[in-house]
Length: 550
Image (cartoon, rainbow, N blue to C red; front, side, top):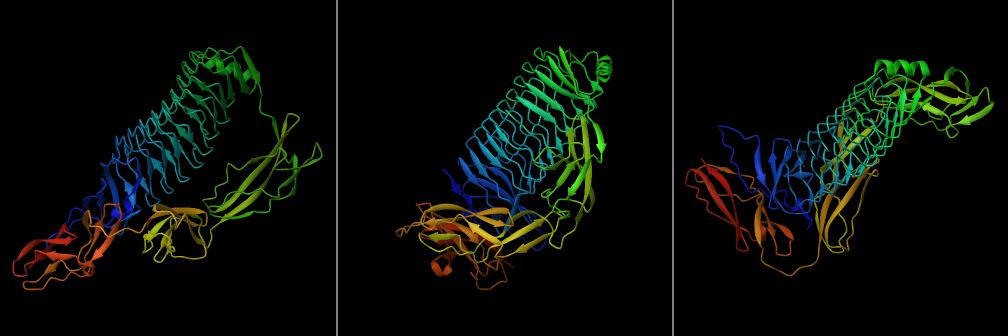
């Protein structure tokens, strides 16, 4: 059963009194449904979950502070969980956070997170779909190892490293696109992924480490790009279905048994000459590479200026964060006398283009014709913007009204969002023409997740629509906010201003109650010095808080 934890996020079951002689920087708190968090000075971190829900919404805010972290081991071995909604406010997830959540089927990592830590989702054997943020740069040690049901994951452009065993034994993974930004894959990165059928190694990778694709028994075709220099020991060992490999001429080292027990490997496409191939084999006699057919495909001769620039792209000036747009580019092949555009076989080499930095960048345009590669280039400029490029948004404050009756109009008063830019700057904005909120249905009772959209980026918050209910007695109460005044001089009268509670009803609804709604406070003695525990009563249910008389 899916339960919304947002209604509980102000309910504190542990009260700490701050004395004049010292201070408390963090509080351990458990919400009624088993979500435990630590409250720090400026943020809250989820530390543990002991509930039994199958679907869980982690609140973006607790006690007025943003939830920015899920700490290590927080959800380890929570076998009941099938789906967890992580808010966009979270910018760090600790190692082993979801380790061995065997029934977890789907997870989306919010924008802003730059690394998946060690063993974060290891042994999540039921995990099928993972959404990764565009900000991701590192996938660390065994982060997704033994996720045997994983089939749907897209590695974002910008990812730089996949560390040891990150996807080892993901046996259902049948395809993976390695982004051009990738610079490092460590040992055993995809070993045992027996569902993989083909793989292309991007040009940014210089080395394939030992055992990186070992025992990928469904792998049929491997294409390695120019720029790769070495293939590690047993990198493709026991890839028993492997039939074809493309090896670039830049490879100089093929370590021991790199292709050992690959009995079906009969054909190699070598992107170089026969002489280069013979030298490669002679220098790597223990590679276990012994194909029956070698197709020599040396790189075509590069002829700079063989294409004439008929018209440059419409866009040549960019602000930081914008993507390259070649719309309008037209070239003319001098030899063939044919006018060409990006849809007629032109290859755009934008490997040197970095939209995150100011500067002038050369874009190379090429076309292969009659065994030669004709090319030309043009320049683009990236400049700072008065409005920095947007990276992500998160909720700054929720609307004041979060509980509605059927048919009520949505009230967004109080809503604001935090805008995070690529240059690291932040700002808070309220409702405007650029901020849209969708997902509200006034005719459907229950928890509803609303989506806030700003310039293509999204974040979410939840509201509750309640059916009209009969007057019933509260099932339990919990402190919502303490009185404004907690320290009294001897003889002072107690002041309940600011005190409120949450009343929970048998139909799973809840309401905020104050002293004007009939709550009473007992236990205060103005003539007894020290800490006093006061009892709050409503509908016969009680909760407590403390004050100090000095």
